Length: 334
Image (cartoon, rainbow, N blue to C red):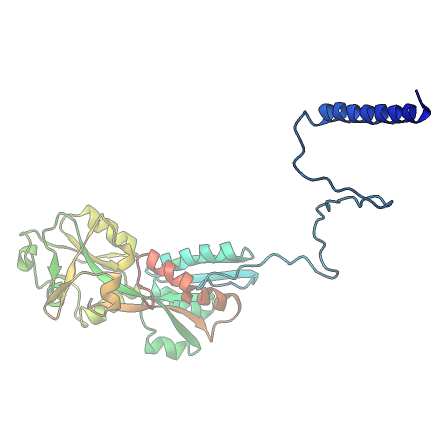
């Protein structure tokens, strides 16, 4: 064979071999499936730039940014923030006002553990005398301070903290449901000698009243009795609770208590006013429909200051007035 033909055969064999190797390689790597994406052929001597996928980097806070402090929620609307005043406080007097004063003291001391408030009863007269003589920090009264008391203790300052209705109560077995103020006066002064005179049975009434230290008695004497004397057999009790308990245990009894002392063991009588029988409730007192109601006072020597002022301010706040209503009395505002 000529040298040219020999060289041509060698080239042909080399090309055929290269093609065979390419086919075999394609079968091993591509699974025999033809490539559909055109290949980019780099014709320059420089290598093709690699395609890079950027890693996910957490955002970096700008320099100088501070982590915000936790938001402090403001106190709910109407919530009274008590002053953290340390000390003892004595509150003495009206048994009508006692439940309000005690419940308010408990709530106040929860908010101010540094305060120690002691509440005691005894009656409005005791409260006025104690604050006048300086033996208590706050006197409680369910009646106005008299002219003689003001003359004796000219520095007394009363603060109206609540309103109370004076409620006539009878035993639940009593068929009477409503009375006029004239009928109430007639029962208490002895004009009516039997329940049959006011719509009940022939039973002789057992009349229950309060002792002479009671502010409720003073108000009842002025507004209902109009200065007339009580019947001689009236039983005197030293607290609203004692009146209610006696009436609950005595079928023929009648008594009077503050609105907050009415419970299912007794029956509250309606009172006629402008021709209508009015049930004693917070609503009817606020609407000035129920005929016998009066303010309740906390009394200080001079304007209240320090712990006494903060305690009274708490009672006057929406929190304190809710306590007034929760105790069955009438808040200063609806």
